[in-house]
Length: 218
Image 1 (cartoon, one colour):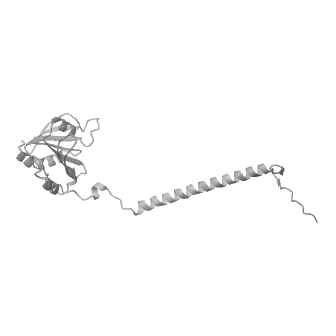
Image 2: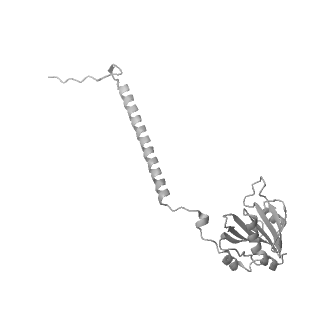
Image 3: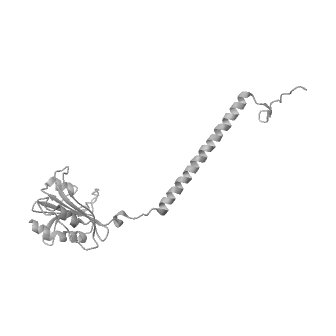
């Protein structure tokens, strides 16, 4: 009995057996389709994993407002440590307990050559007020602190006269210098600036009045 070779199968779409070239091409297409499906599946799995990770972070990582959760800065202690290093005493506002500080530092070796003492405050209404006391400052330094805005008038608070820079109605971007008060005493130029109300600025300026007079201000 002789061995018989099984004839090639007839491909329905062709109506005849495939040639070796057609078989190779078909297998290549099937292989490519399989790889593409695997790639898409892997992308979907990766996306699901990423979404799950984000969900875990959102659910379990503590969140909060950095400004409100951070402990207040003890600017009085920082000033006490730095006292005596500048030609005038560093000014320390005495404010009600609902005022908080988020920063306080003595800035030295600055690019403009003017040392300054800075205190950042958050008001009870969640507005910002900054105090900058520049030592042996010049007019250029002062102009930079108030964003080169123009004096709009003067204001006397607890016997201390201040130049007023009011940018609240300006169309320019003045950042945190929406309003500023500038006075001088001894070798200090004092600038109170920020986004607070007139009353809150009055509270800060009033808390500095006695110390400014002791420096020689009026």
